[in-house]
Length: 308
Ligand code: CP
Ligand code: NVA
Image 1 (cartoon, rainbow, N blue to C red):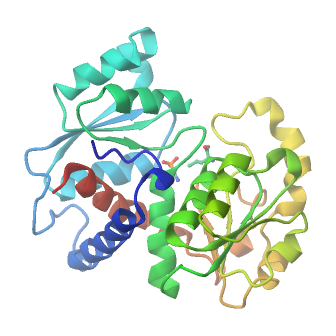
Image 2: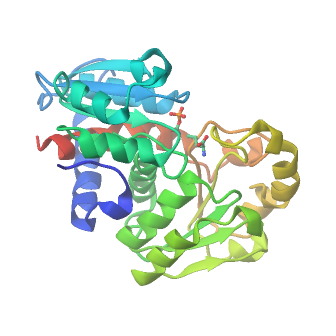
Image 3: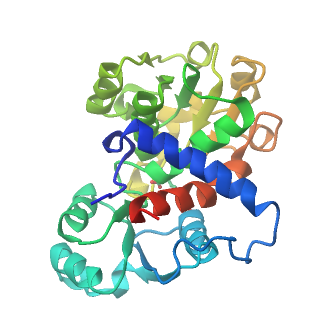
């Protein structure tokens, strides 16, 4: 079953095919109104369930619009309103939904929910974010980088801040797309050692550098994300702000990267915390291209999963 569960679990050739397909679908739309269907309708007659156990703006809207542009239909489901949120097992939910829909996209907390859904579903399952990873985001980020700067292979990506779920998928992508990756942040918030080791096994240069200014030297891309993720307790907020303040992406940090370095953030951002408005709205930033590309990249992921 072609599930899209994580970047390191998907073959590099398949990932590359999805990026190419996304680029082609994006250019084929040629600036036409967003609600108009694509010329080809590969998802004609297909029904897609979009399950959210956490809030979402980009993932929800981009999947919904993407499926519709390709001729399919969607149903957006809130986990808490399903029996899933009231004691029905994930395995039973997966088996039931497989009788109704052609594909399941789920955003959830513990990764085990995603994995159990995939194990018991008879249809493809897409990871729309778990506490541990966010692969659809990084597909959009690769597409965005390559649109602006050409192939990402051999480039240097620097993550400044919390080594969270989005950071984890970037590490997976380093191994699969062949770029180097430096993490800069405080030790308690390092990315998972298992993921660092995996990328190193694939021959990539993966560095942990505590000094943010040194970390971004030679960077082609600087990335950050919220200091407190949806699964983190709000009670950690003050401590995390203290731990992470030195890793804010600001104009001084961007000035230490390559002059043409890009800045990315998956959004939503907390302006003046992990990143300043001067950087978000400045010349290095491609954050809104990145958000748009969720749509195009996920259309390619959907087609790959459905084999259409
Ligand atoms: N970047 C991202 O996944 O955004 P949402 O939480 O709005 O879906
Ligand atoms: N790290 C963030 C990403 C949001 C898209 C979170 O999990 O809340």
